[in-house]
Length: 336
Ligand SMILES: NC(=O)c1ccc[n+]([C@@H]2O[C@H](COP(=O)([O-])OP(=O)(O)OC[C@H]3O[C@@H](n4cnc5c(N)ncnc54)[C@H](OP(=O)(O)O)[C@@H]3O)[C@@H](O)[C@H]2O)c1
Image 1: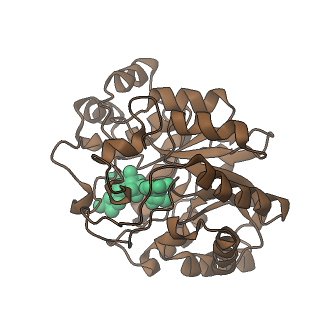
Image 2: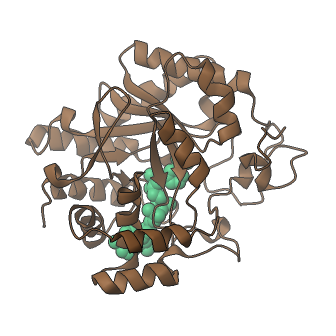
């Protein structure tokens, strides 16, 4: 097994100067990979040199990943403080008191006494069953509400006060939503998870977040090429087949996937690629420690943006919403 010295991996600075790796590993196996396969990959990834893992209660694998963390600490492969571990509260646990319950369960499952970064997974308390059909709708779903979101955020702030989490973050936000909630935060988000890949660069949101000293963490950094069919539409761009990416990959003699990751880290976001295969997750980490993209290559990828959102979130729509565009406030105001 190849080992990559974590010291060589670029780092980000959070708003208080704390360092976080500029690349982590995703742990969402969807319905393609079992919790056993994902946790085995986490074990391998720690050995290879990953120090950041993006977990979530709804991924249904935190208990097995926790066993892997415990074993790595017991074996002395890594110390707790050398890992940066995130988790997220799912949409059905936003109610008063539920965020603490969700955090406590994640801590127990992950076998940790704190997580580094705790996210509100989606800015809606709109529940849908994991793996449900893309057309499924919950009649209880509601549009975004500043009051409801802030009630959830206050509970996250309490987790920081209690020492259960070091930092808190938001996910799948928009500029109008952030404009509404950031002034109300007692503890600001250290990071925001957002979909980021070459065909979906979200430049305005990316700039907005960085300008407020918040770290953008990019999910689906390779364009999630093997996501379930229910999450695909005919117009979706396949990032690893984009001509610009393929051409740069040929020039560097690597798979197009790793070009997406080099671009992400050089641009300034923190990608969290997923793979259960040792050769893939190893090359995903190694690629950000060597052979940078040129200024011209970075520019060619910048110009290749297609504004192609892959995780449209349509299962979170409320009665009366038109279509998935309503989740993303595209006219510059919060869609009701
Ligand atoms: N906050 C949120 O709401 C949210 C939403 C979505 C995702 N996430 C997080 O983001 C993580 C990553 O997203 P994702 O898994 O959807 O997409 P992704 O990382 O863009 O794509 C993952 C897929 O890319 C392929 N791949 C990975 N490395 C490769 C390599 N070196 N060469 C060739 N192919 C490679 C693998 O396909 P094969 O398996 O076929 O090899 C893998 O399944 C998730 O695991 C999760 O932690 C968060």
